[in-house]
Length: 149
Ligand SMILES: [Zn+2]
Image 1 (cartoon, rainbow, N blue to C red):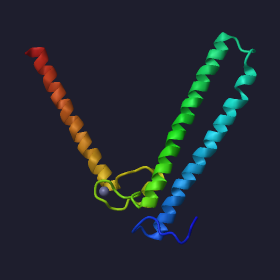
Image 2: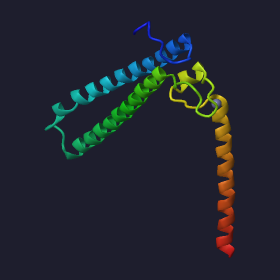
Image 3: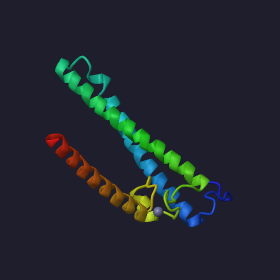
Image 4: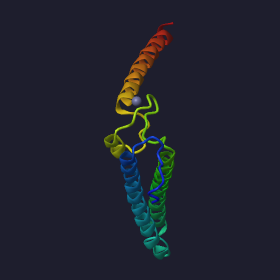
């Protein structure tokens, strides 16, 4: 890492370092998992062919597909981490999308891709719940009208 660079705009150095380590830890973790999975798929992949009957091999196919889906999901997460690291360089990562306040490190550690601070997220959830409740009431009302109208 280039220590003379001042990435992160106004973000203080300590926070920048902390957020970088959160993201890089996460990235390393996922990369390890992906490599392990790829190894698994390889080792019990082609070697078994020919010994399995049709049912067994289609079961193995499904297993492979699941493994593949998992790897794909992890690859997507890796992509998100790369993006977050890029945003961190730009100084736009770690700020609330709604109010622009810093998202706490504790929150980012638990949810590295959080785009809102805790307060805004809670406000949003409350609003969504209210909306859902209203939609349900509307749904119930229209059902009532359909049945009787
Ligand atoms: Zn906020």
